[in-house]
Image (cartoon, rainbow, N blue to C red; front, side):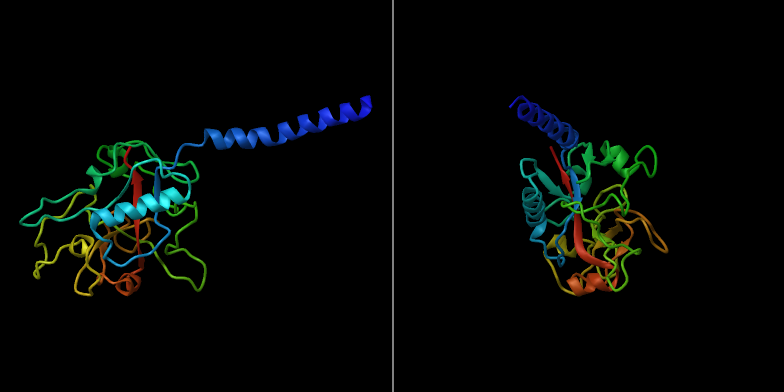
Length: 229
């Protein structure tokens, strides 16, 4: 009888020793604060409200819905509405990805206000809310490049002034309400790879605002989500 009790105690201690480190690691992991959407979209996101709701929905699906989530998107000014800057919508940081990696400690670090390239956004860290990688220029054979991430922003995270092109088009797919081929949107490269501009938030314009237009230049209508609290 004593031998059975002794063996039971040893087994319990062994199980506790085995699982305690994993439990402690899970408890000490920083809360999710940044991700690239796992879903793909056209330029019609339902405006900023629709994009924010998508961030909130995706975060809730992985247990992070208790935080306030904002899409990293700017909108351009209109005669009736002022411009909105992406950087003004996302709080002050710090932000961690689904793997617990620090992306940026502050807005200044995120945008290189004081020192350039002071954030840690690149292909291995700019993962979805589930922690899954997003295809970039380096990707499995037979799959598409999806490194164009919608932002509508300049490199400092601010909206562009209206009427920059000869056609007077904006760079936000009509403030994220259009999926027409006539529009355009500014994107960044989450993998920081490009032949001309490796910026994570302001690299080049899309060829239009439909999902097919986005695919033609290396994107899938994904965007960044940040916790704003």
